[in-house]
Structures are given as C-alpha cells and as structure tokens.
Length: 87
Image 1 (tube, rainbow, N blue to C red):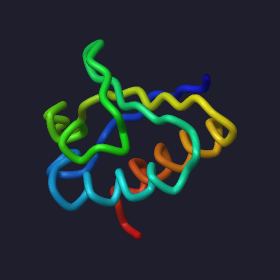
Image 2: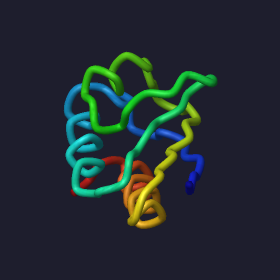
Image 3: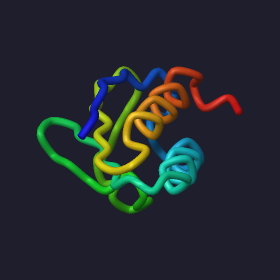
Image 4: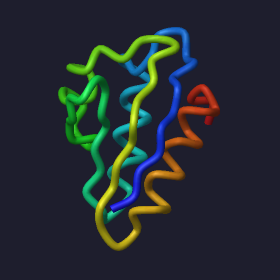
C-alpha cells in the first residue's frame, strides 16, 4: 500500500470535469485506488464516490493505492492534481 497527500488548488475542486479527468486517470491502473478526505474513503475509480466527498479548492486529500502499480498510480494522480488538471 502506498499513499500521498495533495492539496486541490483547482477553482472548482474535484467537481464535474476535474473529477472526470481524475477517475479516468485512476482507471488506467490495475491497483485499487482510493481518495480520503476527513477520514472518509471512497473508490477513486467511481465518479459518484469522488463527487460525494465534496472536495473544494484548498482541500487536502490523501490518495491511496494497493496493487502492482500502486506507487505509479498515486504519483500520477498527485501530479494531475498539482497540474490543476491542465492536460
């Protein structure tokens, strides 16, 4: 299991378009991936799960992965968040 924290800087947080990019990226990996906010953990590959966290700008989240490509998955998702979802 591998995890890292990230602060969402995007104006709308993890909502709509950024959340879609986030789950699409999470689905590229074989590992199970979760997002945690305030001790609530959801599947990072589920749009409804990610949206249900209500992640807004300046929110600190933890990304956790467990599986064969866990470190790559977490680092890629943190990088996506740090890029403000500019692809």
